[in-house]
Length: 171
Image (cartoon, rainbow, N blue to C red; front, side, top):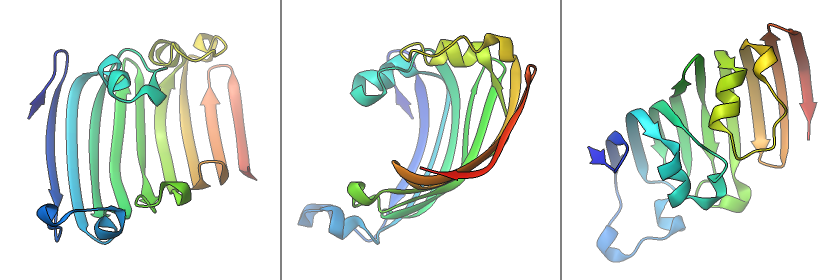
């Protein structure tokens, strides 16, 4: 259990076959077995952005449920759920090459997730987004595979304003 000023996280993490006293670098961690579960009800994203400046656009509070396992270098995410208001984002996938960030590989699948335009506007206040509230509650299915700037993706989004989808595109 980890408590901060505004949040409470229940974490269960295991890192095996690593001698922390012998000095540990990315190469030593690559094949180390890892398992992680994390649950937070009402996680304050403002606390997260103080620790991780690259996510300084986040705001508000979410419920978080994460389960992951594999090796430190290649992590399977069996469950990632973020919820706020009428939004319920569900993701599964994998992160590869975590020990080599320049070669980071992401495979993610978002299925039957509900996203409310007003929730997006509230949680991502730091981004200059157009007004998404007229979209109402949308249903999102998305597949993403590749590096952060070199990937393929396909999606299907059903909104109160209409439907948009792509059978696949590459960046």
